[in-house]
Length: 549
Length: 60
Image 1 (cartoon, each protein chain N blue to C red):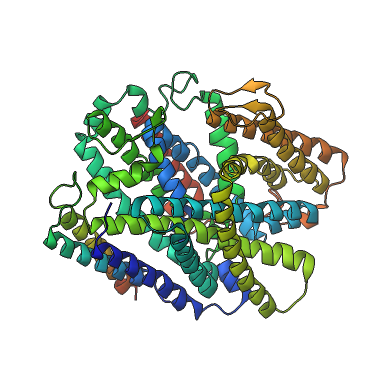
Image 2: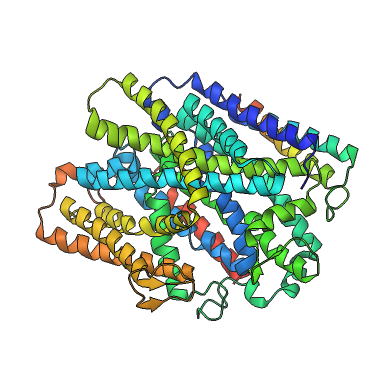
């Protein structure tokens, strides 16, 4: 792939805009609250798009396209089953407690609802995860630009880290959120042409359907048995593991995304955020997965150079960039490459802005210096932003040296949030849940996840303490680890809660269902209320599932 | 910053113009690209950017 002058010009203009937005926002950011939490000031259409853009990192885009070629349209389950229901739930049922509690972060909610130890546990695991996630995606980007454009690994890592650092340092969360919206549109306008062109070349959707095996164009039809579909999963593991535990664990408790909704300018807007975000989210498979599915059809037509062999399979991770090389002439190529860069930066900025908030409020203010003036925490917030970026660069280089450790960590991060959803579910909806119950439940759930990983194996992953079960695919293993971790967390939390003393009701106001005033929606037109909005989202998702069943 | 739609709109207008210029240069280096792809995508970016600017102007 050989970008021309015009392509580099587009990339340069994008960098100028990103930095310019940071600089414009800076004038409005004068307190720690504004820097770290945006001071509840962002309009709902902005928080909604940022809500999904922060999850739309480069690895997501490249990985979804790769999975499209490897598993077919069934990959869309990661959206229709693995995101939409959880987004409906967090908007309708959980946001009243997050937003109403006045907590500034997810760990801080845990402190208000339970106690310090649960918060500390969550804050530290979360901080470590954000740094590694950000470093791993930086590593992926560096590798890709080295391979595709011949850029040096160090140059692309440092350039992108520098730009993210400048705009998050200047404008904090507001700047990150504003840029995520720009990135979202760029990703859609940069990748949608690829889906359209690839499907068009393969003879339209009918052409794609005729050129690839039927199992690749259905989401549910072949899901009953793990041996019938390329993902190697069965319907129970998929629905409960992916659709319930994993997705609710991610979308409902991961501060990275919840922070975007909490930045909204009213309780009403905070509840609408995930619901409005669900509309573009449900159509994202047509932008990021469809090119991969079409790539398989093009390969079966005899078109060379898109799916290239690697070992005894294909090199799926290169599908996206190889499609771009085939379909994007200079000009559009610049937009496509810029979209890749943008998707990477949105993922990284999301991690950095979540990291600095958790470190400043939950670690520094929680355990190191409690009652300093606001200015002090603004300085600490800015310093942790710099530290976060430097640590991410460090982990990116660790990844180059210890590839296997990073693969392993990515697997662990995949299920480490699963038990946390159990803690939240009980904590928010059962006032009897005690602090000690939550902590023992969370720790034993996390332990159960690691133990299951150590005792089972799939595709040569896991099982280092012995193999008592072999899963047909690592996806199935991941889903089942989450189910077990969630079940252990919920049972242990419930049992310990029954034998320990709960907090009195007055301490649980605006934290627990039944003791919290649910916002009154009278006078708001029906299509803006969370309930009806969620019903519309649900119906549309069902229709998409029926079309591609 | 008053309205995020202004920078977003102007960004895509610039992108659209650049793609139209690229379409005029018509240098084909992508084997499977249809002939007018820069023209169509440039127009789409221009229209999207224009709508954003129009929405911002209407709100102001």
